[in-house]
Image 1 (cartoon, one colour):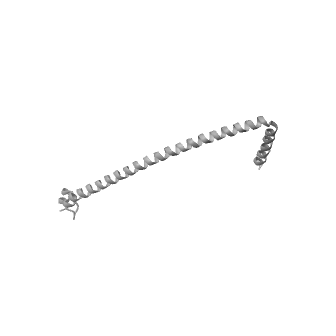
Image 2: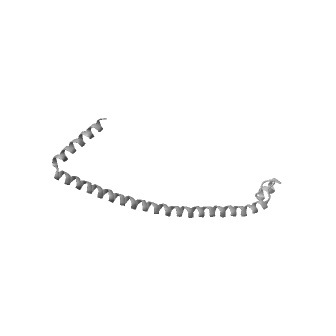
Image 3: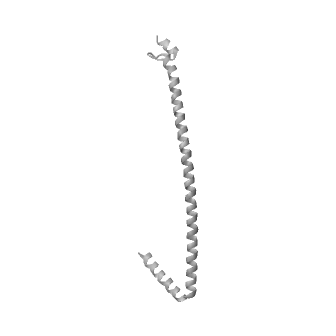
Length: 108
Protein backbone atom coordinates (compact mmCIF):
# COMPACT_ATOMS: atom_id res chain seq x y z
CA UNK A 1 0.00 0.00 0.00
CA UNK A 2 2.91 2.41 0.74
CA UNK A 3 4.18 1.73 -2.76
CA UNK A 4 0.83 2.81 -4.23
CA UNK A 5 1.02 6.09 -2.33
CA UNK A 6 4.62 6.71 -3.47
CA UNK A 7 3.69 6.15 -7.09
CA UNK A 8 0.77 8.52 -6.87
CA UNK A 9 2.91 11.26 -5.27
CA UNK A 10 0.84 11.37 -2.11
CA UNK A 11 1.42 10.48 1.52
CA UNK A 12 -0.79 8.14 3.48
CA UNK A 13 -4.09 9.85 4.25
CA UNK A 14 -3.66 12.33 1.38
CA UNK A 15 -5.55 12.02 -1.85
CA UNK A 16 -4.79 13.42 -5.26
CA UNK A 17 -7.83 15.71 -4.92
CA UNK A 18 -5.85 17.82 -2.41
CA UNK A 19 -3.16 18.41 -5.05
CA UNK A 20 -5.79 19.59 -7.51
CA UNK A 21 -7.33 21.84 -4.83
CA UNK A 22 -3.91 23.45 -4.18
CA UNK A 23 -3.83 24.90 -7.67
CA UNK A 24 -6.78 27.28 -7.15
CA UNK A 25 -5.44 28.21 -3.69
CA UNK A 26 -2.01 28.83 -5.16
CA UNK A 27 -3.59 30.82 -7.97
CA UNK A 28 -5.55 32.93 -5.47
CA UNK A 29 -2.41 33.52 -3.39
CA UNK A 30 -0.46 34.48 -6.52
CA UNK A 31 -3.21 36.87 -7.62
CA UNK A 32 -3.44 38.39 -4.13
CA UNK A 33 0.33 38.85 -3.96
CA UNK A 34 0.37 40.37 -7.45
CA UNK A 35 -2.41 42.80 -6.50
CA UNK A 36 -0.58 43.72 -3.30
CA UNK A 37 2.63 44.43 -5.23
CA UNK A 38 0.73 46.50 -7.81
CA UNK A 39 -0.99 48.48 -5.05
CA UNK A 40 2.28 49.09 -3.21
CA UNK A 41 3.94 50.12 -6.46
CA UNK A 42 1.19 52.62 -7.23
CA UNK A 43 1.39 54.10 -3.73
CA UNK A 44 5.19 54.30 -3.92
CA UNK A 45 4.98 56.01 -7.30
CA UNK A 46 2.58 58.64 -5.93
CA UNK A 47 4.78 59.16 -2.88
CA UNK A 48 7.86 59.51 -5.07
CA UNK A 49 6.13 62.17 -7.19
CA UNK A 50 5.08 64.06 -4.06
CA UNK A 51 8.58 63.87 -2.54
CA UNK A 52 10.20 65.08 -5.74
CA UNK A 53 7.76 67.97 -5.94
CA UNK A 54 8.39 68.95 -2.31
CA UNK A 55 12.16 68.66 -2.81
CA UNK A 56 11.94 70.92 -5.86
CA UNK A 57 9.93 73.50 -3.89
CA UNK A 58 12.36 73.34 -0.98
CA UNK A 59 15.27 73.83 -3.37
CA UNK A 60 13.59 76.88 -4.86
CA UNK A 61 13.01 78.34 -1.38
CA UNK A 62 16.65 77.74 -0.47
CA UNK A 63 17.79 79.47 -3.66
CA UNK A 64 15.55 82.47 -2.92
CA UNK A 65 16.83 82.62 0.66
CA UNK A 66 20.40 82.38 -0.56
CA UNK A 67 19.83 85.22 -3.00
CA UNK A 68 18.26 87.36 -0.26
CA UNK A 69 21.12 86.60 2.14
CA UNK A 70 23.72 87.43 -0.51
CA UNK A 71 21.96 90.71 -1.26
CA UNK A 72 21.78 91.55 2.46
CA UNK A 73 25.51 90.82 2.92
CA UNK A 74 26.36 92.97 -0.09
CA UNK A 75 24.23 95.85 1.23
CA UNK A 76 25.76 95.56 4.71
CA UNK A 77 29.30 95.55 3.32
CA UNK A 78 28.55 98.58 1.17
CA UNK A 79 27.10 100.37 4.19
CA UNK A 80 30.17 99.52 6.29
CA UNK A 81 32.55 100.68 3.56
CA UNK A 82 30.68 103.97 3.30
CA UNK A 83 30.74 104.45 7.10
CA UNK A 84 34.50 103.77 7.23
CA UNK A 85 35.19 106.22 4.39
CA UNK A 86 33.16 108.92 6.11
CA UNK A 87 34.53 108.26 9.64
CA UNK A 88 37.86 106.39 9.50
CA UNK A 89 38.72 106.94 13.17
CA UNK A 90 35.35 105.63 14.35
CA UNK A 91 35.77 102.62 12.07
CA UNK A 92 39.22 101.89 13.51
CA UNK A 93 37.86 102.23 17.06
CA UNK A 94 35.00 99.84 16.34
CA UNK A 95 37.42 97.32 14.78
CA UNK A 96 39.60 97.56 17.91
CA UNK A 97 36.63 96.96 20.23
CA UNK A 98 35.40 94.06 18.10
CA UNK A 99 38.87 92.50 18.25
CA UNK A 100 39.01 92.87 22.03
CA UNK A 101 35.58 91.25 22.42
CA UNK A 102 36.56 88.38 20.14
CA UNK A 103 39.78 87.80 22.11
CA UNK A 104 37.88 87.77 25.41
CA UNK A 105 35.31 85.30 24.10
CA UNK A 106 37.91 82.98 22.57
CA UNK A 107 40.01 82.92 25.76
CA UNK A 108 37.20 81.37 27.77
